Amino acid sequence: MKSIMVTNNVRCLEKWEGKLQIDYNEEWTYLDVLLAARDYIHRGYFLLTHPLAGSVKPNQTPFKSIILSEESLEGAEDFRDLTLIEESIEAYHKFMGNRALPEWSEKSAEDFRTIDLSLMEGVMANPIMNRR
Amino acid sequence: MKLELGKIYIRDVQFAEKTYVEDGTLYVCKEEIEKLVLEDERLTSARVELARPGESVRISPVKDVIEPRVKVEGNGAVFPGVIGKVGQVGEGRTHALVGATVITCGKIVGFQEGVIDMSGSTAKYTPFSQTNNVCVVIEPADGLETHDYEAAGRMAGLKTAVYVAEAAKNLVPDEIVTYETKPLLEQIAQYPDLPKIGYVHMLQSQGLLHDTYYYGVDAKKFIPTLMYPTEIMDGAIVSGNCVAPCDKVTTYHHLNNPVIEDLYQHHGKDLNFVGVILTNENVFLADKERHSDMVAKLAKYLGLDGLLITEEGYGNPDTDLMMNCKKVTQAGVKVVIITDEFPGRDGKSYSLADAVPEADTMVSCGQGNLIVHFPPMDKLIGTMDYVESQIGGYAGCMNEDGSFDAELQIIIASTIANGFNKLTARTY
Image (cartoon, rainbow over all chains, first blue to last red):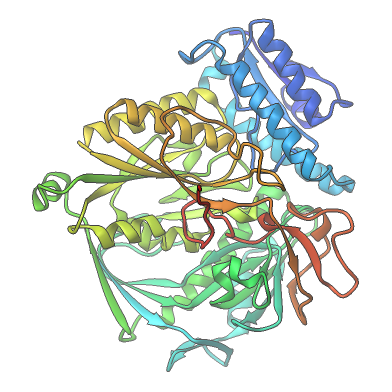
């Protein structure tokens, strides 16, 4: 099953490079990751993870990772993924409209990378992610 | 299962040479707590401080809040599989120090968050301004990895609560409340003419700082299951969630789940409270599909007429909430959802991250985007280093006198989505 992770989190790249296709760009903002995921959905990919994973809000964490695949694991209705990513982009703008992302210290930024990595680790531990 | 909850009412907390309760005052031995917490070599410092209702005290950043409870009769021990042995709980008799809590504070991560004001204009938004709090401020060993620090902090709070609760073991309770749920067929037969109502309790389960445990099992690793409502009163569910202060369900809130409490109050009168379905909020969409199918299956299998659903968190969990709502409704069971909202500062944006047509009946727990003013406090337990960066805060929000303005979502449990708080929304 051909899966791809879009991410701006270098820890995810370090962990899964070579094991999973990774579309990584450290210049990407949280929004850029959502938009990159949306591009893949437009090209026929399916979401495997929820774009708003994690209780740290879009105007709090700089890091986001999303996994998509050429094959869906569910019987979701048409346009479900497109709707989900668009709603996530809307949620991003709503939070950013309240308050901009703080200027984090490197220590805090690293903590956010650790949390994002942990969210993905939970997903990657699923046996179906290692299906050949 | 039948559980007698013996409530010992606490009206004050003081330091003393040993830990005991007398005439409604909880006396705690600071040194014994500090020694107990520091048995874990992952922590290098543990400082105990007290915070009482009405005091000019601010506590931040808050990790977890726990009500001290101890089993007096019946199988098992409180917090099974985490502190106590893993044996089944929910029966017999348990004593609770009602009006007392243990609160853990510490910066597990640089942006850690959660404020409790014991007095002033923002005290009303959290229940812990009215409890007598034993605060344990922890510091980690140098270079301690974040997962280890979270685990150490979680254990520190639970161990302290168990230690303090021992003081309740041999006391005569001020009040005993009895809760009983019979096995399914007997329960249905007990009130055959009343609607059969269940409760779907969604547990936070996304990863580091976002986890919950059922008998010590990580909720992201389980599939939907049934629980007797009394199990939660013995700490079968423990929180490992310490992000998003306003709607994180503390261990205290699990022990005192308000939906379960209210369903029991109606039980036998206008409804038949049949039991609880536990489920999770995994990030993997295939898990959401599988688990919402299973929740609907269990709801129909139990023969329910209706059920209430609560969630924990925002965004990702809203999708689980909607999937559960849709599939349960389509299975022929009526659904009411209970959740908090994030409609933006002007209150006009769409307030949940997802929606389905079946979600037509909802109880709101209020919104977390409202800006409120936090007056200065005389004493701080913990640290205010990062208020400007805490969720709900913003650059320039702190004033020189120690007051600040921030969104309601910075306050512990202010909009908690199981309905424990006092905020709501009305339509006109």
